[in-house]
Length: 313
Image (cartoon, rainbow, N blue to C red; front, side):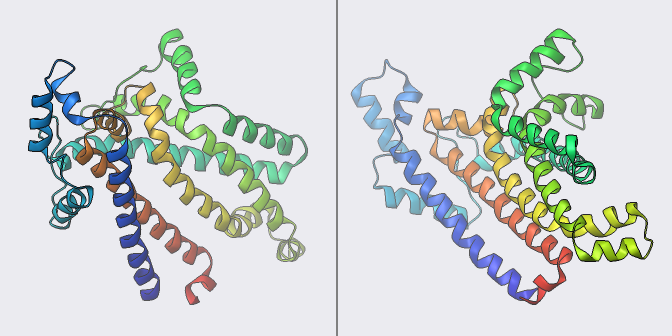
């Protein structure tokens, strides 16, 4: 366990450094100018230059990155170039909607995907082909298109669910749940397809193994064999996929949050990138990277629980 945590910590520090450095370089060289975005097209050359100088945009790139990194090491993510509001406060105000969307989508993908995969592995035939079709459709349909279709059907047509926006849990638990349904389904459909196929293949291998035949010969119920033994062993590769999916869902929020006018980190980073607001972009990228390293640790711990042999490595 100590070796696992030490390896995780070393990898995490390196990953956070690489992500922050690459993000800083890429956003610095991206087309656009924060000074022009702030002053607009009517500013003079002297005004642009004066603002760049005041914001430190004319300083060498390594010096600007070091200034930002020094602040981060002291717990300061800096302030937005546009609003002068602390980046930590901006992120704190938007992190709850994004986490609700990502975790909700992951749970939706896991529950529906595993259920469909287990049923497919047991039934085979038509259910197996249905899983293949669902998997193909799920990974082929663009999220933004699916979101627009769901809004048209369930928000505009039937009026069952809100088309846009987010309601906090504290304000209204029922409103919070209703505001999450369409974004969660939109973001999670692709995951359902992947998890269903992965679960079906893993469960098929387990149900065809020798220990399952032995348990059937001993008279154990099929329900106990499937859900107590086979599913636990099949969960190892599925857990790995879920960890990777959790990481990918953060990038998926960028499109989904814009479709549903969702006040999360995805929409924030899109606007900050367009404005060349480097501190905000860096803060969001670092936040996403922290969730990635935490997800990796959770997957490693869960893998060790499911497969005791992995703890000895």
